Image (cartoon, rainbow, N blue to C red; front, side, top):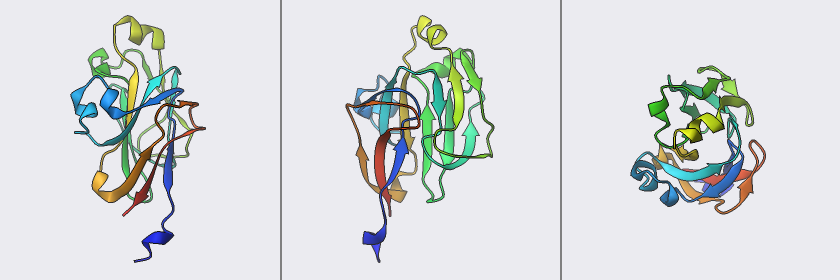
Length: 159
């Protein structure tokens, strides 16, 4: 009831780059939406920021990914690069701690782009809603160049 009153929510870019479809991510877990639905960013930046306001619920031990829980119940995952877990944290610097509430644009992880790419690892960064059953009308902003913490990359409505 009153679902027409629900406004669109959005994720801002967690990193500078170009927004691409998940289907273009060179990893079937992301490309086939096994881990969630959303978009990816072909990154050009070095600092990964919170894409929205919420609780920083998890930062992986290797600092290659983080999860957030939003007030509307949406859970999101930002996975920095493909196969970056293999670096065991090398090339990643944690700037925030799990359990803290952050605002959109808050720096979370800084990366050493040159080091990571020198290992032949892609920095395409999926940004996913992991509990997709809680949302509807996911609309990605594919094909645009975005700045971290500034430009919207995805809008959605909660159910």
